[in-house]
Length: 118
Image (cartoon, rainbow, N blue to C red; front, top):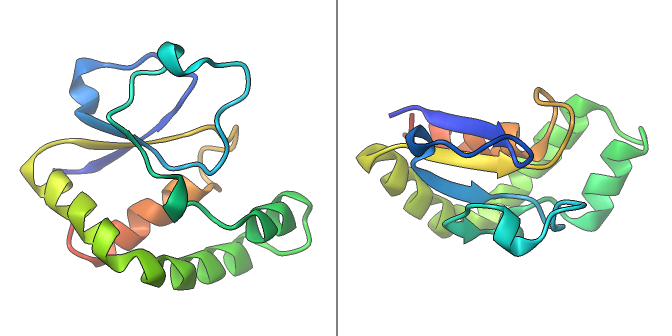
């Protein structure tokens, strides 16, 4: 099954399957009861330092992606669990960023695909 990416501000759908928020910070303007999630994995999100460096244009998207992929190695066991979820059904990585092509969920999806998901 493919891994889905969805902005947290978009309406959840039955087809989302297992929904995981992959941001370190809770999305602005939303209460916990406003979001349908199965899990919040803030421990796999980029460090504050890495996130701020990217958002403040200190590093490029490519640098962010490479550093974050390296950081995800520390969470390999946890991410293998997500691969199993994706292999059994639909997995949706939920994120808050406005840029749908350049955010941490994109990198998590790429990492999960390297591990054999989607």
